[in-house]
Image (cartoon, rainbow, N blue to C red):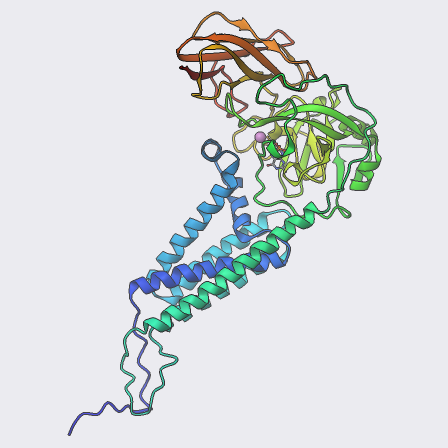
Length: 524
Ligand SMILES: Nc1nc2c(c(=O)[nH]1)N[C@H]1C(S)=C(S)[C@@H](COP(=O)(O)O)O[C@H]1N2
Ligand SMILES: [Mo]
């Protein structure tokens, strides 16, 4: 009697065979992609930041000083993109590795772990909503389901019609069915990713659309002498689009102009809350101020000058009445970033402002719309809160964002100067050339800039018009270029007579020092 392959329908179902490892890896990767993209879609539908950005922000909050510096050195103002790419890579590697186990339970536990990370980030952040939690959870469910479907797609033979007499012995791996399922999961991931991204852009556009078309008229301004054409490459006022941007915000905090307000409270007699309309209605002051970042290396680009418009902080502090115990002006942004500077700085007569305008335009999103602080003479990390939410008069017990991460509590700007022309390793023709740059010592002012080539004598550069002690000063000097390789150095002296130190110090903990040195080539 020949053996039949007939099957007893009452027999227990054989377990599905385990698909090859490569199938597990692909399934893991695609399911992970699906998780994240669905998470992005759901959060975007809820008008809130993506899980990637939320986790990224939590990561930034924990970055040690050396890593922050390394990131800025390597990526400059593209550090956020670099972080996003890094997070995607880590997720892709983990999802692929989990997939190779080919066990759905292992994959599910891994996904749950990363989802918890997303939820924990959402929980610790200011400005997150219910959607910040719903997104990762829905994403996790979608990812685990995708993984199960993909793993079974090659072996379950959903579409293979069986006659009762046919074998259920393994039919082998159904490649077409797996490819079909992989295509479907990829399509879901791609569609959610694209829709999510466009919704996320809509969110930013909605904030953007709330910027008014014009600023109120200025009541109090200063005369700015002409500075056009003096410096060959660096305009005195940095256009808003070229102005450096440094902050910890992976995505702009959601702002509703009509309900936005900020409060001045803490050690004050009467707290004050001002809406955007209130700010526009107050007397408008405009001042040119150079803002710079403590992370700017010697010769670096993280500096810019703008005409800032807004309300003088001093006037607001007079209104609330600062109490005796107050030591610092401690401010918080809509996304929970903080910083603080001494109360004396706010009251010593300098033009600290709650700014709403930059170079004649309402503040761009990148630079703090609806309102930010601008404090002449201090680095941004202790003073220049963007997307302002609160100003608190506090004692030094409170620590601004960067202080526990190893940065100095006080951040007065150090006198610095920079060579812009010739550019680094530029080749120039022999003959008379112009060497040009900028120098700054905000709130003290620049008195003198000296330049030397190849360890020759220091020569005094010609200075551009003196706009304000709170702004940088442009300088130029002529030099008869002889063929060969040359080194140019610059040093500035402030209006207190202090010449900038040649002692080289790194940006941490309170700003870089040393003379900017640039090499260039003179050839025919
Ligand atoms: N909300 C918020 N404000 C912030 C920061 C930040 O991370 N978050 N960074 C500060 C730092 S370190 C600097 S140097 C300035 C830079 O301002 P800009 O991006 O407009 O040039 O913003 C300051 N204000
Ligand atoms: Mo900064």
